[in-house]
Length: 391
Image (cartoon, rainbow, N blue to C red; front, side, top):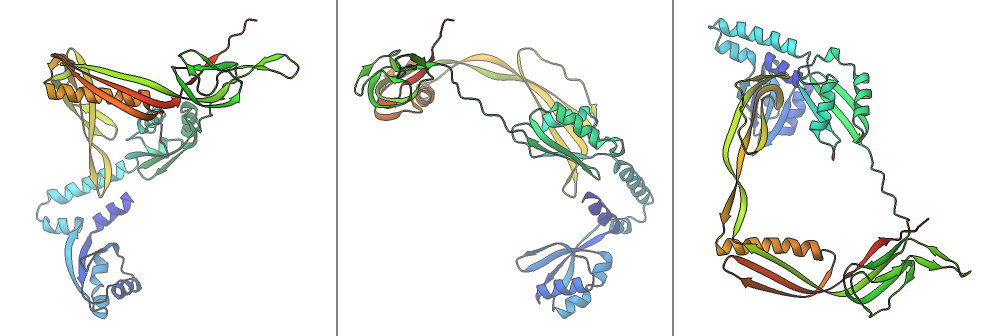
């Protein structure tokens, strides 16, 4: 696609606007006259389209037959630029040199795209292919696609399939991620015990021997479902106990927020720029590392032509230096911080519980705020505990 755009730019083309009349008939007549149109769009009843110079010279006849008024909106391409600057001899020479450079660079990879990946990053995939010679600036004729694919699939264990497609100066790496094998459910002997205290409201035993009754009050560590099962012949065997024990529980969640907190604050930043040209990095100056806690970053700015990103641009890299400082919060921020931390604790502890009632109290101190919440819930209190057997 990029080469078609380059050829059109070299030969020149016209963007025209056509209004009034019958637009559909106009487009059909252009097709009958073998007038090439592209990027056709309608804006507020006006038809905009591109055509080559030869096509625009022939467009008057379809316009008259369809009662369309046609005018040039924009002239694009080298013929119009050369005509404008024909008195300057250096310009056409520069154009010729540019075309030669484009011809040479067209034999190399300009862009590399990755498709089909979700969990594995583009960067990780590209790094493997770069080690195998598939990188920006590499000559396409030097790349053995079959060999690269075989080596890459061996390096990337997360993938079940991949394909390298090189079209012109664009390389596309298509991948399919391997389906993770689900973990096998545990079958070793175990009991189900109470993870915390409560009054049992519901009991469902799928495997094992029930040890408690509905309405019974239990404390943390009590045996709820035993993995020891008595057989019909009087013998016993050990099973992987499984079941559901729903109990009404009393839960207390508490968080104390002090008015002084430690926070990383940026105190310095070091950066530099690198020129990027077809896979070659040219540092503009050295980057000295500072002292303390640092965080690095890198941003890439590429040139583009006709909506295509070119392998030419500038890379900005650097790092920020941070120091740990103690901040003193006023009462409002201390309260907001306390609420945020308390909410996180509440969500983590009671995420799977059904809350029947809630009672939250604030305790203000000179240098802290305490939030205390009391909850009555219904939740599964059972947790599996492995049975160890001596040989």
